[in-house]
Amino acid sequence: MDTGICDPHESSPAIAAAFGLSAGTILNGIYRIDRFLTRGGMGDVYLGSNVETEELVAIKVMLPRLSEDPKILSLFRSEARLLIRVAHPAVAQYRVFARDATLGVHYLVTDFIDGDALSARLHGEVPGPDEVARLIRRLAGGLRVTHELGAVHRDMSPDNILLPGGADRRGQDHRFRHRQICRAR
Image 1: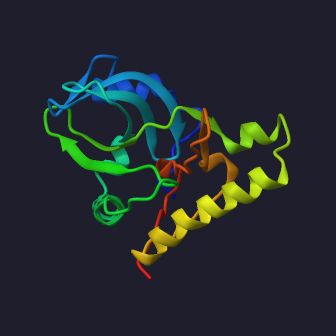
Image 2: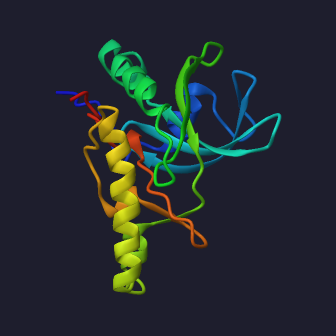
């Protein structure tokens, strides 16, 4: 049975080739793919930028077989409609869920958070109690806002929390890692 989750041994260059994606590819005349960042269960994530403003963004590209599934597309559309309304410092801002008709690719654009996952940080220095309490309060606030809109996070884990450099910390969900992302209450 095909679960819709990608084979971790499937190469990202093969996915990129299926769409004709590479550094410099422009999606809908707005976003440029700059470089590959990571692979998730439902697609690849790229560092990108707005071609007019040079603002950095994360571009999450759906796997071809998932973008052809009406149920999966419906899930992503519903999620995007809901999460584009979330405005909280602990949540990466959704910008757009779109399809580039020329390339035939569905993609999601969010804030780019330049930092490491909390899981990587936990393997190094041990954060103090005050820092842990601050992070928990911030993340709980972000979850509260998303829950109030009707979204349920299905995998809140240290791998899905990015800690950018400096004092500002945002929790960012790599939603492409999950088959069922959120649901209405």
